[in-house]
Image 1 (spheres, helix red, strand yellow):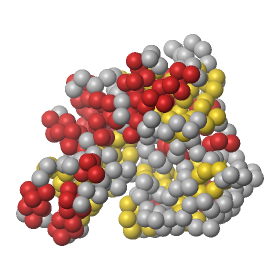
Image 2 (image 1 turned 45 degrees about the vertical axis):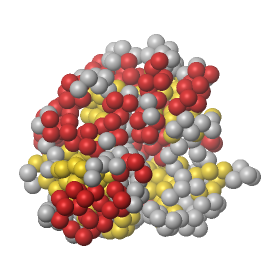
Image 3 (image 1 turned 120 degrees about the horizontal axis):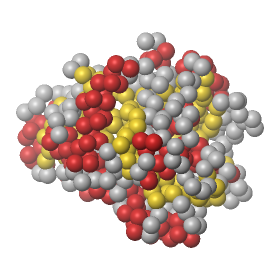
Image 4 (image 1 turned 135 degrees about the vertical axis):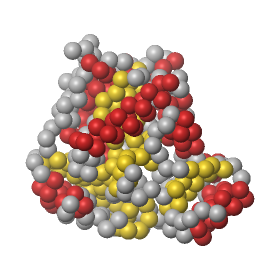
Length: 429
């Protein structure tokens, strides 16, 4: 089996829980000589060399990779991919896990993706798109609620409104196109029928026309228990998602995954990274809600710990075009992640609160840092809306939940909040 011919010097780009999980699992690999992070966060600074180079600083990241003689760059967030970081690194001969800018458009433009899905006959919601607010409002008034209103461009996960009424849809259109709450990301707008069913996340490693499906997972987007309140970046996740049975996964692969990989290649994109396909399991079968071009957060924190195949080997194989030679093997354990947030998120929330962590971690439990920093004295403080991700692995989902929530109870900071029903749908199914 093909493998790296030397231990690799890796750079992980990003500063959230996803990147902490990527860095931590890469660091365990026998194929990793070293792992550095840019920019990282306060918690990651205790285990890695962190460099103060922003994830959107393409020139700075290229310079860092050259200076540190990096063999493989692993890009966590979507913004640097859309800014062309992979293209810039490739010009210097540096291997990258993450697509070029043309492939990153699959997340950077919802309209671009909708056109691709329709062109290649991949199941998705019926939709129209507009560049004029008046035309969009007229269309909305002729439709039946509920409907989904999306800003075309990147909006940090906040550009989607599920409108229960026509009036809510009109307000969303005005906010995006007239008030420009998302800036130029809302210059165009996508309006979709509202699909009903249950969501699941399908992460697919893609290297040209070769692909490998990673363990299934399910995210919890709403801030409140029972899936109430506004959408967030994700309040928790678990894997595997039993919603996606073996039979359903075969169907998803046949009508969505394989056609998606072929469509991307047919459009001339040499995609080397992860294609995260958000699906809705509707009464009419699975349909694509969206493509993302990077690992989900917090799905990463439950998917990667379940991998038996070495992560660095997989990332290297993906970047270098031999993915089909590295079989993906998965541990039988269940994983569950609880996101601990600051009260007020996803709106206004405090920062700078001292964080107390337990001195010892239980066996298969991990605390991944997302919104943390170090104060002038070097002490850990909160620095974001989603502060920590607590992940546990166990033989059953219930045991994983008990372990994760037990650890959550031992973590303290003043505005700590978290959902107490992560995984509940599956546990009561």
